[in-house]
Length: 64
Image: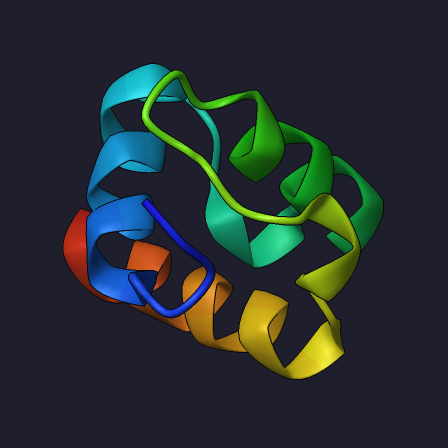
């Protein structure tokens, strides 16, 4: 997975952090959780605020 795979990342986060409400996750934790995903294979430094916002929103949408 790359940073552009926002929906795939969100689905993985739903599975790996089922008890977490993504509305309350700070971007530092979110960034760390994304780069820790086993399927993630991209430059960790490329995960900026805009992509993290998109991932967080997709995660919220997937949970609801």
